[in-house]
Amino acid sequence: MGKGPIRINLALQGGGAHGAFTWGVLDRLLDEDDIEVAAISGTSAGAMNGAAFKSGLLEGGREGARANLDWLWQQLGAIQDTPMTQWMMAFAPPAAVLGRAFEFSLGNAMADAAARFSSPYAWGPFWDIPLRKVAERFHYDTVCAADGPRLFICATNVQTGKIRVFTGDDISPDAILASACLPTLFRAVEIENPATGETEAFWDGGYTGNPALFPLFAPDLPDDVLIVNINPLERAEVPRTPQQIHNRINEISFNSSLLRELRAIGFVKRLLDDGSLQRGHMKAVLVHMIADDALMTELSVATKLAPGPVLLAQLKDAGRAAADAFLAAHKSDLGQRSTVDLQAMYE
Image (cartoon, rainbow, N blue to C red; front, side, top):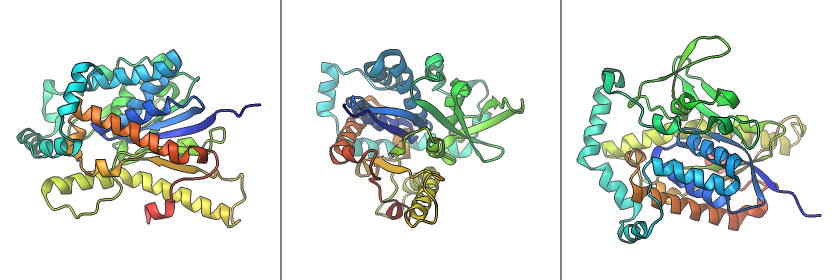
């Protein structure tokens, strides 16, 4: 009798255009017929990737998921793989060069200054969330379906500062937009709380869960949580320029909630290992991570807001390569052991 599928949960970080790296990771995971995604927790770009993945999977299997992810990123600025695309890529500078060019461009400097000295509430009829037209085109009958991977989308309640996790029928275009709502650029997204009937305002989920891991701890979900990390955890050099300082603040803020949850997982694992906690009372989560910190440290918060076709294509390729390296090294570890040194990560 053959072995059953390897069931895993995915935790997809947000990071604007850098989410194209996650696109590449998911594209590579779809090549593995024996890996089954049981649940997805996503924030911002991770939420959009998760919604596209689940909807496509239910509508057309693995190739449907791949096609839906391609569609999503074409809407966000990518271009189709054509001979012209290949010609452009052959002569394109590396992602790091593109990142530096955009970071110090006049257009980025003007946009950054505008964001610091004006409010999205001052823009009147000119204000809108550019992602709305994309979010509204998802097929919510499949995004919200009980079948397929369970989907969790994270947003931050502006008034309480607490996380809200949308799942099932609560997922809507507004929920996805709330998860990606940067407060310096967009007005808070208002959503009615079905439990109270009151309207609540939401900002980007990255402030409280990037992404939230706790929804993936349900007893009927697998132990393995594979985090696709697109915000560098470490940088070797101390930031000195205004751009570098702002970028590092952004990275630390959007990683802090993830590190807190990883610390809690590590604490539970130590209690289980030394017998202080009886197994079965708490879940022994197996943590894995796919990342490319060498690439992401060459980019910045500026490139998160610049979904140019060449950069998106390079990020997708980098995601596929990182996933390929992870599978080559650790596929046999799935279901058996963690492949992340949690203590080294958060200490």
